[in-house]
Image (cartoon, rainbow, N blue to C red; front, top):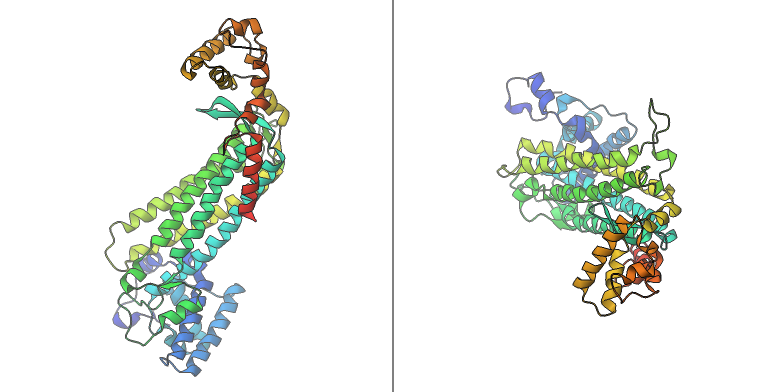
Length: 457
């Protein structure tokens, strides 16, 4: 069969051009969404008397056959037919004859592909929302067990103040909560129907765009046909959200890598999520979080690629826009894999509480509490800060930690020190004392944990 658009041409397409311009190798992922849109379109054509009801029924029957073949992996797609739309139309015509060509009445591949991508991205966005919630559940599960497990909190990767391990994990919970909310909100922009905008200017046929939009579950119809076929903002938004999401995955992965190292030794990842070395048998490599961290670059690249693609395009559709799909598909698949691995890896992670406890007893992360202690006793905080700075320097020189200094040593810096300083400097007390809203104090963490549970129920 000749090209479905071949009537205008007198020469066949150069084979190299066919191969270079074909998109079927990747847009076949849209096959079932394309048929979904075609079912809605042909139903409307019949009800609007644009084609007969008998013709509409024949086309729907043919689409069902083609759909079944695609689901059973029996459909053969060819480069000669360029894209998924023309491949499906050709398969349809082979099944039911020339009447299959009436399916394309009142639409163009321009609004057809846009519709397909809206349908695809809506489905995948909802899937990713569920996967993000699974990661949140895994974080909450670990946090629920470790409210009173204490580890060093860091700034500049230097020990700063001790914190509840639950509090630390819940920081990531709220990052993922914002990611989830962004994904949920983006569906408002995804759920617009471009179907019926045709090539760019609409169609002279008396179509009912509201009907097809309702059939496909869209909330809105694009008011402008030029915008409908050229808009890729919804993909840009998805890639932007994905870039933020993979950033959060990467930050958490970095901490898992650090914590599982011999230098930190705070957690151990399950063997199922690690690999070994081909020449160093003692090694247990955190390959999964390393790859999660590494995948960040490709998602950023997909965003920058589409931004660069769109920045100079005049209205309406241009062949450049064929390049909008692979980055979207790749991002969806990359996030699907990342989130699917992250949740069970977190659930199975062993937390080494004793090592964390030892760490906070062998550092100076309780130093701020001495300044607070003196400030409560009436010494201005800035003066108290200077005093504790000198105490820390002295302790380092004496190779002691703050809890190991004697009362005489403390009195040498200020007469305000009393025996209760040792209670104030105990890691449990240091953490519990930070009981301001959103703080790491145990009471606040229990409240935060309850709030987190409400966001995933």
